[in-house]
Structures are given as structure tokens and as C-alpha cells.
Length: 210
Image 1 (cartoon, one colour):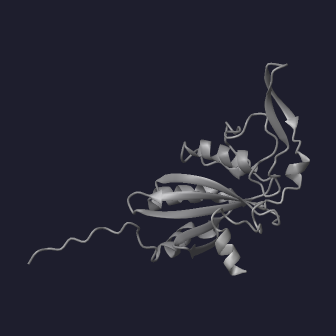
Image 2 (image 1 turned 120 degrees about the vertical axis):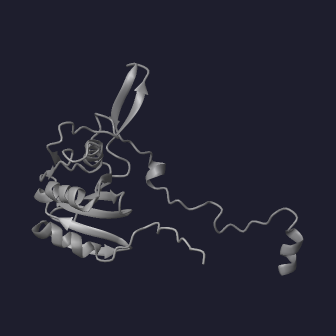
């Protein structure tokens, strides 16, 4: 009888994983859930380095694939920092979250993954989250003279300043944003909407309707 080989699953099962990780992390865990097929674990901000080290060294989540920020302006601690971890040996992913306010730094994890330096800079640039221990916390996506953090919910879509090249000064200059009145009152409605327009050649068909 021929042996039938079944391909390995593309994504490993979540069965029992969340319970095992929460038990291992112990008091560092604030909350956990499985949603949309993903395991999400919320941990104490001051314990993020210890939690991620344990997940890396004891549970095989070797890679920090990405970091992201989320802004909830109505919360006292308005920001969430999300760490996306990948286990190459288990073919499995998890997400770890911490909360932070504007003046509460999150401990850096550059001690665990060097690429965290760039990822933390991006979250800092977009949201203004501070990372304690990151020795190179500079803007990375916006210009050095940029004001504010563009992915905060209260940041205006037009920004605060605009830049242009000045022929007189032979350099790039910053100026306050000035919107034309036409732009301010633009209603985004197509001028053709609601128009009673007959294509050439359709006059007869239009007359038949009458």
C-alpha cells in the first residue's frame, strides 16, 4: 500500500497555545484573547522586555517581525504598542501589546532584537511614544523639522506646516498651511450627478419615453 504524504499546514494551530503562554508569563500578563485567528497577549509596560525575552528563549518566537502603534485618545493611556512575533520552528505568530501615555516611556527591546531600533523610531515618529533605553530615538519617516506626530487621531489631515523650495532663498522653507477657500468648502460631489444629460444619438429614444 502506497504511503500518502499530507502537506504540512501553512499555519500552526492555536490550540492550547494561549493558555500555555499565559501560564508561563504569569503576573506579567494583564489580559489575553484569541481574535480573528490570532493570539493577543497584553502585558505590563515595565515587564515588556522580560516577557518578550521569555517568549523568545523559552517558547521559540525567534523573530520580531514588526511593531505598530495604535492611538485611543479617549483613554488615560492613549497609546498601544504592538509587537508581532514569529516562531520559525513552530510556524506560528502571536501579538503582544503594552499601553503607554504621552509621558510614560516604554522600555526598549533593542537588547533583544537589533531591528527594534528602527521599529521603535517609527512608532516614536508617527505617535510620539517614547522608548526608554533607545539610544538613537530620532525621526525616521518625517523630516527633522516636522512638527507633531501624523498618525495620532487628533493630528489634522492637512498638517500644521507645508514646505516648498524658495527661489529667493535657494533652499527649502517651512510655512504655515494655507488652504484656498475653494478647498475648504469643497463638497466632493460630481458635477454630473443628477444632470439630465442625453448622449448624442439617443434623442429619439428619449422622445419615445415622452
